[in-house]
Amino acid sequence: MKKVSVIVTTFNAEKTIIPTLKSILDQEGIGELFEVELIVVDDCSTDHTLKVLQGIPARVMTTPENTGGPNIGRNMGIKAATGDYLAITDHDDIWMPHRLKTMLPYLENYPIVTSGYTIIDVVNQKEFSRNCNSQYGFVKYEQNETFLARLKKLNSGQITYLGAIIYRRELKDILFEDYFGMVDFDWILRLFHQQSSLEICKPLYKRYVHGSNLYMRDVYRKFDFYYSLMSIEDYQELYPREVRKATRRINGSRARYYYLVGNMRKARYHFRKGEFNWITLLYYFTTYVGHRYVKKKFNIFG
Image (cartoon, rainbow, N blue to C red; front, top):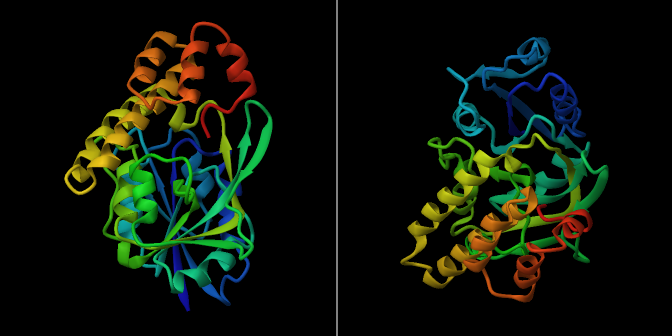
């Protein structure tokens, strides 16, 4: 029977962690179709997270000190994992009951399988799903296809948000950067490089987005910007056109962040270094007037 190692990183998650773990431990097919190894790595929480975890059938680990990001905990979990397949999730994600039962059969033929997901926007009280569309219920991606799309920072193609991914043990040696401790762009590139993959056209987990999410913190956006630029340099010689495009799109992402938080001067600076198209022009001109309407009506970040 195949085993799935599920790695959950936590920090001050006493209010969210139990529903997350319950959604993992209540997966349909556990004990019959597959086994689940649950590994929780806490980043020195200052609330009652560790107390809440008592009695949960999981291996609970803690980082030696607070690291300020999930990557060191993710690496600890990956190294400790003994499963045939690995999945990494945040401490407030909720899995659909049939997630593993749906995804695991495809891992026999593909080293990486992803799924769609449902975004729960807590602040704006919105809910919407992101998934592919296919009459077959899945989309196959040839070797390097997803890697090149991510390298170019395209919004189209396979969903590669971390919580959407399950991958085979043969890729277990690919670890997250631990200098900044919170960026995963380079991990995605290294995971998908020279690999084929498959996406299931169903939202199989819920991702909660709120004001305290890591990806909206200023320090994360800064680290993500600079480390992404550093990461793509590794592929400059093999994929020069893609790296040039990625540089422009990384600047565009930086611009949209500043747009969202209201720093229009810096937004304009990065828009000028980004891709030249009508969407960028509209964003650029509305940094002077109309940005409040745009932010209210449109989803600047996913």
